[in-house]
Image 1 (spheres, one colour):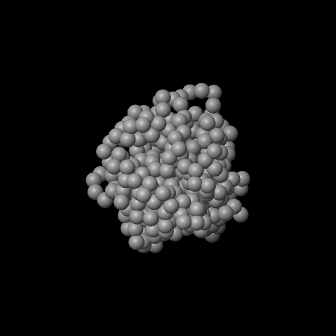
Image 2 (tube, rainbow, N blue to C red):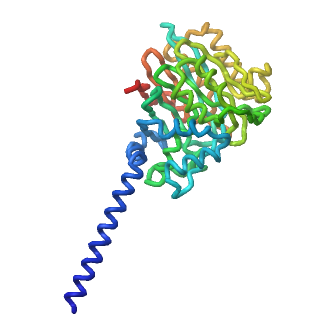
Image 3 (cartoon, rainbow, N blue to C red):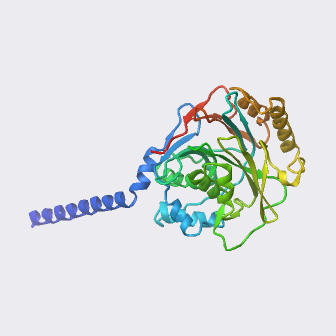
Length: 356
């Protein structure tokens, strides 16, 4: 009897082990794309709470577009919950909105250079390298805080790394292999009037992902945006700074339910379409006028350190909204330099990837 009992428990143990192995194998197959992405996530040495992630696909973005996109952060969250967690847990996405500065110019070789400050009340940056099968490769920046709601939560464990996959859909800025540069800036006056036409829908951040994947020029970017109803994220107003390898540079603004394109090399936190530099507040006006003044002084031609110097001059070291990161992009070398927390002597450099 004793031997029979031992044999019985051995059989049960073997069955449980086989079930566990089968479960792991099934989970590995079900989440194979997600596991590949999470395995690429790493913290950047010497950069506190700065992370890096690689995605060699569009991660369902074409499916997202084919389903009509999304008219709210909640709809983006629902789509990503199904993709990332297969419905097992909720993935939340929002965009609280940056208060920022952008400048576009040429260098002494007449190649495009571009700079951007992201100012906010704390951030957990994730640098995302995306190489879709059918689209432009790019490097973009996401604030993980827009996914978790906290600067205390970082993608350093399995669950948080799974959540970090949503960063692909929440870029604050980015550059693609064609040299298209895009940045999201908060608009401090007015509001984005809700639109509801027969066009498919995109939130601001998913619109940025669309442009990075599909647009090579400002003209193509504007044409793409015109095919969608663009909706506010995080309950605030936005505009998009877009420039390309030729040096063309615009602010795409959303005024009274209409998309308005304004040619400009300098952008801060008010709609230029209104022609009122004071509309975004004193800080936005000062930063805009300083950038424009430097641009005029140099006739739009910036040497190696000039863009970085201009960004440093309009960066914010005090108050609630501080400069979380700055970016300088050089089209001739395809180099993207990051500077975190106003440490302008400590660049973190990336080569903007080409399509494989």
